Length: 254
Image (cartoon, rainbow, N blue to C red; front, side):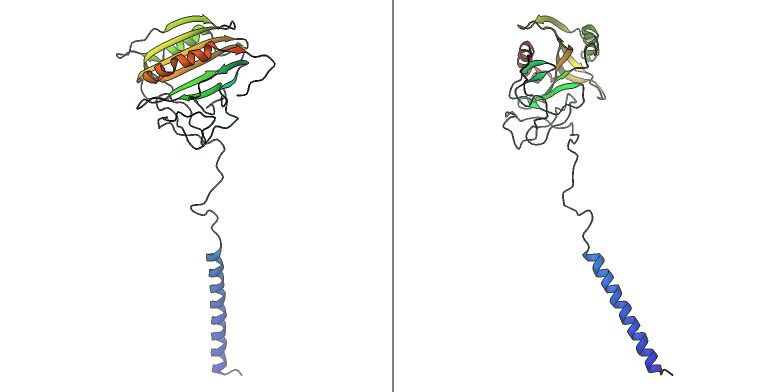
């Protein structure tokens, strides 16, 4: 028969083993690495949608910029900036590039961005001077015979602009032909701009749009933003359009 002393010793041994096991398990749990460590890095989507809240001030050539991160113009509602140096898969990274089978040349001060939707052939930020917000330069192509007629697009752009008291503004129209024989129409509007998604019209805005009767169908170029900034870039924008050249078999990087 076991004595009370033996029972007491067995109980103490059981308690000691249980305590040792518990301490071992706690130690293993506390030493395990956190599955989502704070302050670490995670894989991010390749094309993060940027914000639409800051003003572009960078004026360096995109081909040489490596650390600047220009932002989207606040007043035009364009797509966001591309972090770091522009990627080669962004249209217009080179100053000479392809626009629906036409060769185009842009100023080095325009900052290329990844287009915010597939209908945009290219998308640039045209920086503002001093305290002026940036403007946006884009081109749209919907396919041969698509995208509406010249007059339908002019009417749509006209409907986006009003004067100070809310009355429609008549656009200034200019028909021209490039030296290479491409016909195009310049459409100019200035006033309060009702851009898509804006809660109310934005005052002191200007648009210079161009309907280009290109070999593959209409291409719609557009420079839009604060009046002062658009004035600064208007001539360069029209020089780019005037210089459009139908491409041959020689490819142009862009």
